[in-house]
Image: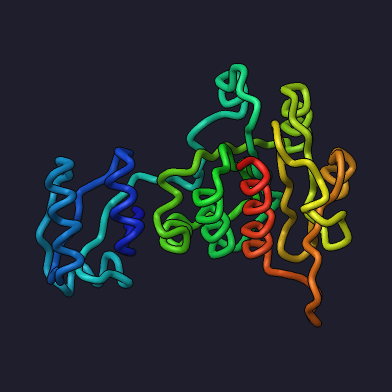
Length: 239
């Protein structure tokens, strides 16, 4: 069973209208009482529990915990349905995650996606990060708002995106400076794993590589930080 304990994570899950509950309530402070009120207004069932019992169920709680029925998969839409629903939309942004296995990075990336207008996050259905509570807390609840899809074959998914009019760019330290590329229109950005970067098969299918010019002494940015910088530039160009 999965329980959300972060205040932002619980709040955004309730606001999103997705299935959840009950909300377990022990000794609630002012912030937790605000969320209890939100739950009541949204007809989320409440259960009063003892502090000791709640600590056993959700050790990282701050007086409340929300039960969610999340499985290992965070997917909520298929790529096929996403593409079919685009219609004539010109500006569309998809983020492809190639084996992002750290749930903290995954959550931080989702937070960036929410802030910078990513339309879909696409990942593998077996090797991506799979820890609902950590992802929800790290994303500050953005996981409840960002559309996600999973696939067993990212190579085929990239081909499907190209057929739908997408240009695909991979993120790489040695890539062309991101601000020199025209990133308007239908764009997909590929982020590689924390240790190995983008896999060879995916790299070969990218239309180009983009990077973030820097003057630092260490090798590179953390993948979630890089995601924020790259996605901001894409939003800047679109605006």
